Figure (cartoon, rainbow over the protein chains, first blue to last red):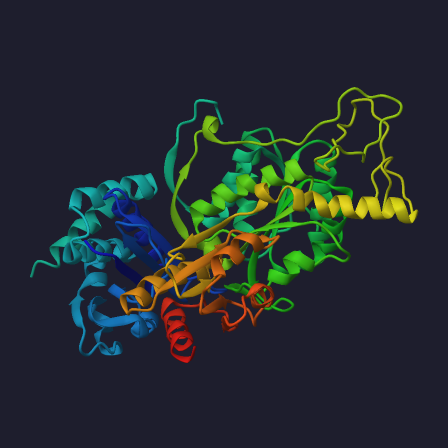
Length: 176
Length: 384
């Protein structure tokens, strides 16, 4: 896989950074070099939150996101915030209720019922993990087993079962 | 850390890598006043130091933090503090004391936008000159500027070694973007790390002179309780440690503390040269900007412009000899820095005749991108 850049974006409190850390750990175990950066602003809950990954099988040269290959949008505050970094062939995964807020003409976009799936699981807070499952399914970064193994290494133990369930649902909603 | 600790690879933010590098180097005393964007250095030290029987103190302010580490260093410990621009300003008086009284210490400055309180959460590289000349008077200081998280870890260890060996304050200078960037770091097994320690005076005799040195120009340090008579002062002092205004003794002291860096330059100097041999043009960059330049020089070469990069790792003293040997014959140099033009003044001093020097400067709280460097390189090549 050539070098690629991923951004997971939403609002503070959605677990955006945890999703990024799990994916980075999984990619690291695929023998990739991964640089992670994140929003660092005076706001937290409710403000724009983003987790960026730059992955390479060589040394990562510029470690900050500049041309996104993959973008996930999980909150209205993030709907258009990353448009400047998109390329024509970027894959964008959007929580479907946000479709009208996004301006993604010309890009490859998948609108998926991410938050709805999390709600059906009984916990809207698992939106991040549903999104992570869906993104990994579509992008094929690594196997499902490796992603789930990363969950057990990175996430707190009390979240393992719920996160695993949500990730598997995320895979499932891409299969329509 | 047990002696058998194996090398392991972990994902770490730059500021945590700095803290772990300090612990690996033998730092056992940290005093600081948390300030964005350096606070994670203090946070991690507060966790790590108790595990190795070290001391962590959250001090009442920046000035006291600097004073506390100097006292602990004089007491025999390896010490560190971390700050950002506003705190770095406040620490300057005591940094001068460390330079003048030759007290080993490591000061981390995670740069944010300035002046004044400026942009607490945004990166900048605008403390280049302050790191060299922030405190008054001619003084020795070493400034190290890493460009990746693994390098923050390795160079923090080296900062301690240099500080201990040379009895000089060493500044670790990096920007907010690197402080919060998370990358994979191989933490060395403790047996694999090269550790240097200060020279301790032995054999306390009545005629002992605490600031006398041999050919290496570095006096031995006195360990409290070892029975030496000694005196430490910020006033210009003779070899006996007491203040003097005797011009001959003042000159001797001043030249020794400045010359000690010069004669140990081989130990201090460090830089990286990438694709410089066949290059027509050079980019000079450090810190996060050097990472952008790494990509830009590759892209420029794909477009037929032969570019290399000179990256100072030791920023001060600037690696003059290395730069001069590399810049010879180049048509142009681009200095990319997140300030209004600070390092460029140093580059202009050493440019060969006929070599064009351009600056690429960003002062809006954002990082310089590979595309900006590429565009400036094309401009340099087109107009040269």
